[in-house]
Structures are given as C-alpha cells and as structure tokens.
Length: 597
Image (cartoon, rainbow, N blue to C red; front, side, top):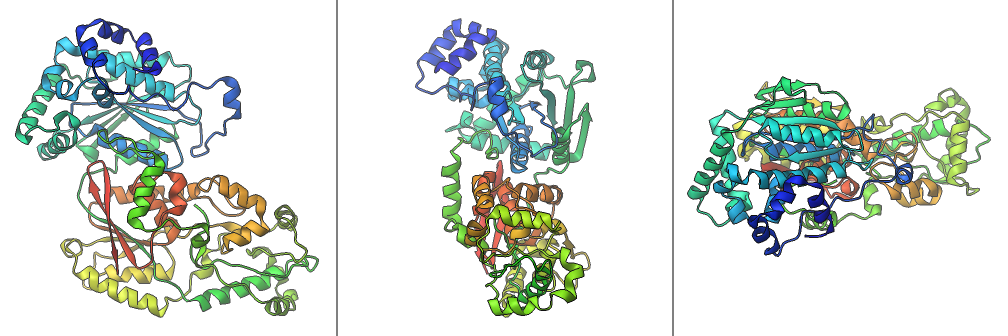
C-alpha cells in the first residue's frame, strides 16, 4: 500500500486489528493492486483557504456527508450516482466513496465478494475497510470547495452508524451528516436490481448467473439478521426512500444542498422511457436583422457625445459561451479528458470557439449607421432599453467601453425577445415535415403520448408540432422560458473574435472559466443550469416519453446533465441541427443514439 493508505491504517483501530490477522497478510501483501485512491488534496492550511476562490453554486458554503443505509441491491449506488451528477452539474463538487470499491482494491473480489465473507467472523475486516472509505470522504470534505461526499455502504447497524457520527464529530470542519436509507419492498424492482448487480459487479465476474443470484441472496440474508432501520432515537438527520419515490420521509433536513437532494430523490424512478433532445428549426435572418436595426436606432440615440461607428452585432439565435458525475459503483473513474474525447468522438468534432456563434449576423455598413444616427432625436426617450455593443473608431478598450455603459446607467435586459417573432426558414419547414414523418414510425411515439417541452420562441413551438397528434387532446406542448437561449448580455450576437478585440479583459475572464463567467448584463452557463434545474426534476419525474425542443446552449446543459459531462466541457458539447439525440436509461446513467433527420 502507498503512504496514504498507511496513514489511514495508523488512524484506524479496526484496520490495526485487521492488519495483525493472517487474512490481512495474505489478502493484502500478496496482491499486486494499488491502494484506494488518495484524496484529491490534503486538508488546507488557513493561508491556503484564504487564497482559494470559493464556488458560488450555492447560497451558503455547506459541506454535506451523505451516508447510505440499506440492504444490498436496494438502489443505494444508483441514487448516489444521481445525487453526485446533479450537484456537480449545478456547479458544486460532489464525489462518491464506495466501500465495495475499497474492499475490491484490498481483497480479491472472488473471495471477499462471496456470501461467506459477510459473516460475523469477518465483521472487523469489513468495519475497517468501511472506516477507511469514511476517513477519505471526511478528509476530502475539508477542502472549502468540496460540498458533498457520499459514503456509499450498507451501514445497516446502529453500531456502525454511531461510528460514523463519532468520526464526523471529530472532523476539523463542521459537516452536515445525513443518513440516506433506501428501502425496497417491490418484488419486481428487487428482481431487476438483483440482475443488474450480478451482471455488472466484479464480485460475480465469471460466475454463472443462476449461481451468482443465489450467492447474492445468501449475502442479503446475512445482512437481514443484523439490519436495523434508522430511528429517531439515534438523533440523526435522515432521508428514507421507500420503493424509490413512492414514499419519502425526512427528518432534520435543512440547507440549500440538502433540500435540493430531497427534491431530486422525490422525482427519481427507474422507468424505461426515452428523452429526446432536438434543436429548433432555423429562423429567418431577415426578420432578425430588422429587429437588430431597430435596436441600433435606439442605441445611436443614447448620446451624441458617444462618437462610435463600426460593427454592431445583435444576437440571432444561440450562444457564445458555456465534476464529473458518478459513473456507478463498478466503473473505473477515467480522467475528464479521456471521457470527453470518447464523447466528442461519438458525436462529431469538438467545435472551435469560432463555431460557437454560427448564428451571429453580419455587421451593418457605415452608411446604415450614419443614416440611423440622423433619427436619434426621435427615439432618445427609449434609449435606455438598448442592448447592443458599439465598436469605437478611436479604438477604446473594454474598460473604457464599460465605463461608458455604466456612466449612461444603461440597463441591459434579456434580449432573446429580439427573435421571438422570427419565422422558420424554408429549409426549417422541410425539416419539420421530415421530422413528423419519422416520428410516426417510432414505437415510443405510438405506444404513449409524449410530453413535449419547448422554449417560448415560436420557431421552437412550430418545430414541436411534429410530435403532436391533432386527434389526441392529451398531447400538447409545455412552453418553458427556462428553455430560452443563454443570455450573453451586451455581448449577445457578437463574434468571438470581435469580443476578443473589443473586450479583451472580458474575453480573458471568459477563457479562464467558461462555465462560471457571466458577461455584463447576461448570465453564465452555471446560471443557465440553475435556471434549468426545475425542468430537470420534471424530466426525471415524467414516466412517459419526453421531447425537448430548444436551442444550442440549453441543450448543451441538459445533455451534459444526463451524460454526466464535466461542467467545464459544456460549452464545447456538439449538438447538430436537424439531429435527434435520443437518451435512454442504462445501468447507472444514460446511453444515447443520434439520428439525423
């Protein structure tokens, strides 16, 4: 074992006894395996804490230790993966510490994974390994930017839960300990869980499926002899989930993160239904350009002393800018870069920065600008509603431009309404016809009425008509403003190169953190994910097929949630026009299929 594991052994009285046993010597020192992963960083010193930029994903800086409780094959790891993916997607930092993984690293799973290992004689060994995972989880939470650690283990006895409480009480940083107990009485769900476990767990690799199921049921029977549900007399905060969201009981749950976790758990189910993501059909450029010219008139009326001429860019459709979710208890944890390469390889080439604003419009000519300036006196009263960014012929810096905006007290409202009345192009209408014909051939569309969600923009609503049956009164679109495009404020519609030239300071900030950076007057991708969080819960809750018709930025965010993509990669996710992204539940996540229409 490495130095980190040796340190854990010295701190852990259970492992001291374990190490002295013959089982430890034969089980550890004769194995050519690496020790459990060390924490990503040591406990920070006070000076280090002051230098760290604390995440602003949540209102208060909370640190939650979520300890699972329940018999094997009750969905604890599946729920843990859901929670970690959700918190990471919102801009937090969450991680799973699975006791089974630690056991398989330390002991041969062909021996430690059998029912005979889970008897009373080996309880000290099991406690020691679980304590190692717990210590690593608590040490990881000492970092100020780490919010949620999930200690994924059975923790079925009051004695084991008391060890957890005592360990948390000795933590240097105050932690919010919550026990999450998963209870399952539905025999159909249990049988499905058993099959998932024996087919995917390394404990049963190479075993006949029938023998593996028998061994798993024997293991569960041993746990049932000592299993005690979490009670109020233990004085702990807890969440109890029975048959997934069929019944949820909570006690002592406070704080932004904890409440978000409860909301998510109340929406989870294991139903097999597709979720289809689709970009809206393209809009008429002429309609958008007319709106842009109108806005330009307002801007030029702002102040005659602002001697600006040059290019003005008002947004057309989509966006400028934008930890890994849990992969399940049996998956190895690949690096972010490797996993993202696999995703982009299957979906197409990773877009360059220049490709992220394909819908930006060409600049107005100098003659057009001069002509509109002559109309300035007639629109001066509405000048504060302008939302376009000028380019100075005097080469003003980004700071100077921002000073002008602030000096004029310019209010920068959301401007996605600028394309609200844009008509769908001829090519877009042809796409909708093909989409309607394709949808009629799909089993998921025939079997049940789909829940169709769109943005409030007419082109998205018109695209969604391809999924509606005029003879079915139950099928209708739900229009959500949360699905509208990312608002990039005063930079809406500008080419990336234009921002780099005109607002170099803002461009550098955006380059450093595309997920959290917020352009003046606009929102960040993290803002967008929080805006979409209510919709995500609705998608999780819905049991029938789901169709989401929206725009590039919002679909990038939604796709990244379901596929557990690191948030810093969201702006580079490739979602092509005229392509359906079909997501289906698969083990501890979602698999995808892409269909070009």
